[in-house]
Image (cartoon, rainbow, N blue to C red; front, side):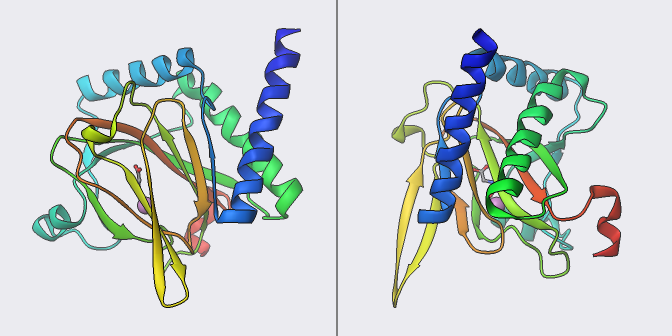
Length: 216
Ligand code: OGA
Ligand code: NI
């Protein structure tokens, strides 16, 4: 019974995500991850932090530390198949992939994702997520893990939409349980200066299996 209800709620969320993607270039749902799931993700986050598994994130081929720091200040830890505590996460993302393939014919095959922590005082300047040399990334997914986050905490995700000669922006709070999806090759975005440590999972839905990405 309760599984039936959960399935139904998930089906509605998937509809909402795809409608958003089709109509306004991004899809957003709250409570995609339950409070309990957010806690599990935060616990894993903390364990990996304690094991010193987070590394300063890079930007494409660029590995100049000083240049990097002016562009992005997050530390990341990639999610791996062997992270068995996170199988519920992978399962939900695979459900999303199947749904996008059925409804939008995207031909998605796989995903990659990492935990990201933005220490206080960091940001990620405006960018696109698809690299010129590797067009494997089709859809960006962002899962937020911050409880009780307010405007005053900063760290909003700013989305940029071209509108003729002008552009429009929209700022989104990185609230726990929230999931955002958009086209990795189309939507420019940035993470505004955060005034508190900020936790998220950033992922990409891929049009090739991860193991074949060297063929890109
Ligand atoms: C990224 C990114 C945004 C966020 O990792 O490419 O844009 O809100 N992250 O964490
Ligand atoms: Ni990005």
